[in-house]
Image (cartoon, rainbow, N blue to C red; front, side, top):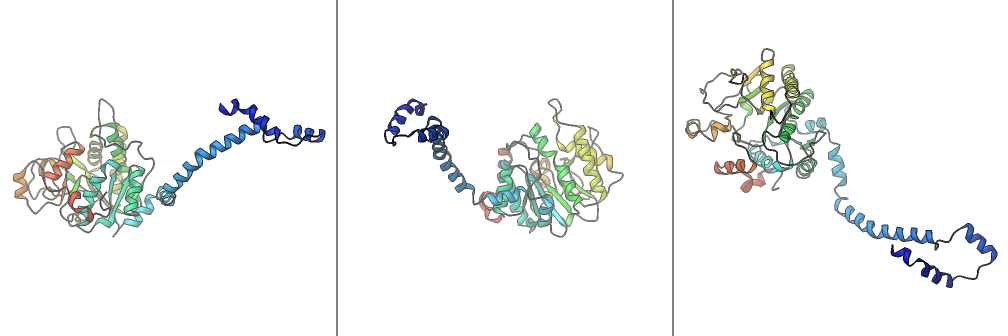
Length: 356
């Protein structure tokens, strides 16, 4: 507004310094308006404003990001096939799916895996770009994002629609890795390894899994799929799974995807991925070679954290501890603390990510 208010005095001052005009020069001036005319001055002032305001910001922006922009572009284009090929050892990939709020749990889990010398097999499926960049900045090549990424980066409460959207992507990720020809182990990151689980994956079964029931089983219990419970289905945990790249394992993943599509989340029926996994196991059990892992080695949180008599009786037999049967980010951390399983405070240097 101020440029228009002072335009006439400025033109008068400028005209004082001009040479007297001839008819020819006046004609030329009319044909080619001076840069100091009303329109020219406005354009000039506008250009100065743009340069003065936006160029410093642009230089600052480049200064912050120019050194990392090539890396960011690289990881955005990083594919699951490339990532699996990079991390696979002996044809096996260990997978987790993580969003930014769960990075402390990821680090805790990684420390326990590094102690068993299996961390180089780990592939983090990042559920947001912040996680993709953070992991690959610290540990290049060990994170991949499979679009589309969920919009939010909040810590989803169990039973929420966000939690369902997050976990329902899992069988597709696992199926894609199987299709690439790899064995794949899936873990939730609220787990801690106390020993090497691979010796327990005996035989050549299609799918290995753990029981989510807290009832104590005999030490030599059957490895068959347990009978259905009160809801007409089994109670197998979908948080610790090992799959071989067989037609049987792929069939279970495809059926799991179908069951999730048939039972979407609603306000009245707050679904999660686990019932769908159990229905998939039951509906394919006659066609697929299934294997229930020993409870003494892979106890559910409802058993390990709540039955100390059993824990003492099976001391030295535990392999992977799952911090389930409790909801809430802080509550899980506190329980890990209480049982000496929260490792990141004192042993972050053992993680390939270091201290986050």
